[in-house]
Image 1: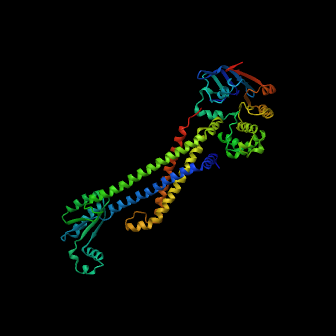
Image 2: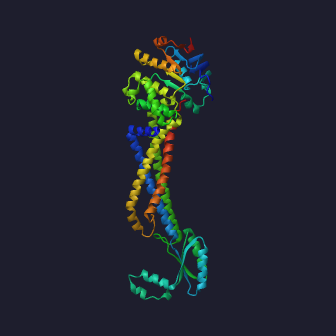
Length: 304
Length: 222
C-alpha cells in the first residue's frame, strides 16, 4: 500500500470520532445535494413539458380551403419556435369530443361534425413566444379564433403560466443552491477544522520529516488523501441514500404526476441521471477536499 | 547548484545572532571528505547552531557556509529538502516517529528520497543489521531503550547513504557502555568513507576516539 495512503488511514484510525464527524457532515451535504439536483432536473422537465405540450389551437373558418390550410400549416412548421403542428379535421374533432364524453354517450349522439371547426394545433419551444404566435395566427384570414390549453392553477393567460412556472423553477434552483451552498460551507469548515487539528497533532512528525529532507508535497500528501477519503465517503454514502430514496419514491411520484415526465422513463435513464450527479459530486468533493486541506496546511507556520 | 568534487564543509567568518545573543562569532573551519570531527564545548556554546547551519535549518547572518558544494546562505526553500536528503542526521532526542515501527521509521527516509518501495526491504534490513536492530524491526519506539532509539535514528540517517553524517549529542542521553557501543558504530561508518561531524560535550568520548576537535566556547573557536 502506498505510504501516504497508509499514513492517511492511520490518522483516521487514531481519531475515529473526528473522522466520523467529517464523514457525517459530508454525507449530509451530498445527500441533500443529490436530492436538490433531482429536484432541479424534475422542475426543468416540468417546465419543458408545459412549454412543449400542444398549447395553441387555431380554429379555422368553415370557408378555409385545403390550400389555405396547407399554406398556414407549412408557414407554422417553418417557424423554428413552433413545433408539433397538427391539423385536426371536423371529423377528428368530433371523434375527440366523443372520446372525451365517452362516459355520457348521449352527448356524443346529439352533435354532428359540422358544429366542430377544423383546427391547427401547435406548441411553442419557448412559452414566452406563445403570445406572439397567437397574435400572428389571429391575423390570418382563415383563422376564426385562437385558444390555448396551457394553464396552471387559476392563471388566465399564458404570460401568467410562464411567470408562475419560472418562479417555481427559480425558487427550486436558488433555494437549493443556497441550501447546498450553506451545507458545503459547513463541510468545508468541518474539514478545515479537522485537518487543522491533524496538523497540530502532527507537528513533531512534520518537524522530523522536514529535517530528513521531505518535500512539502511529501508532507502534505497524507493530509490531502485523508480529506479525499472523507469527501469520497460522503459523496458515495450521501448519493447512495438519495438514490435508494428516489428509487423507492419514484413509482408514487411518477403516478402522481401522470404523463408529466419528471423522472427519466427508463431504468437506464435513471442510472444515467444519477451517474451524472455522482460524477459532478465527486468533482465538487475533490475541490472541497483540496481547498479544505490546503487551507488548513497553509495556516501551519512554514519553517526553513 | 552543483555538487563540490571535494565534498567538504567550509565555514568562513560565520556569525549568527539570535537577537542580541551572539551564538557564533566570526568562526571559520573546514571539514574534509571522510573526516570525523568532534565539535565540543559547554552547553550553549554554539555546537547545535553549527549543525543547524550545516543542515540549512538556520541561515548565517554573516560569512559563508558551503556544504558539499552547496552555498547554504543562497539555497532556495524549494531546494532545501533535496539538499537535506544528502545529509544524514542523528539527534540527541532521537526524533523517531512514535507511531511507526523501527522498520517504518527507517523506511520513511527511503520514501522521502523517492526510492521505489520494492527496494526498501533490502536497504532497511541492511542498515538495521548494521545498527544491531534487526531483531527489533517490528518494535515500536515505546518498546525500545534510549540506546536502541539512538541506533534507530542512526539507521534512518544511514539508510539514504548520505555523504555527510551529522550527530547532535548522540550520546547525551546514554550511559557509558551504550555510548561506547554507539561510538564504535560511528567509527565503523566513518571508516567506510562517510564524513562525520559530531557535536558533543562528552569529553571521555572525545579523548577515547581521538579525532580532530573543534572546541567552541561562547560562539568562538578556542
